[in-house]
Image (cartoon, rainbow, N blue to C red; front, side, top):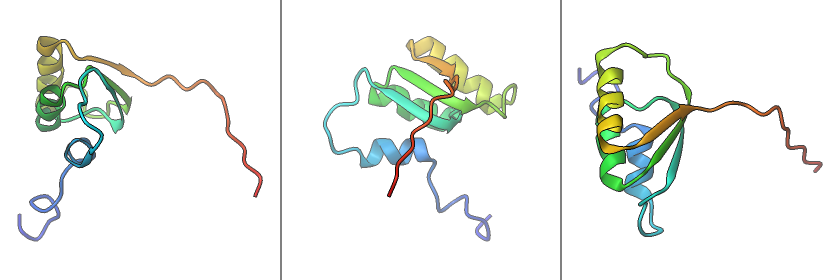
Length: 93
């Protein structure tokens, strides 16, 4: 285990919550690339985040993923997959 990255890193969701310096996160939305794991789900709930928008749910059906959804459902946190609009931003330099 100590030869891997896992005991030394934190997921982006927890990192964002811990590093936020703007006051309360109550009622906010969180945009993530991957559906949060159960550990991040607990932090999201405790932080007061009310909506999670994710790009991919590639671990759907796995225990950690199912636990996250149960936690969100019990806490009233909404979650849904991002639907691209096809809009583009173009900048000329």
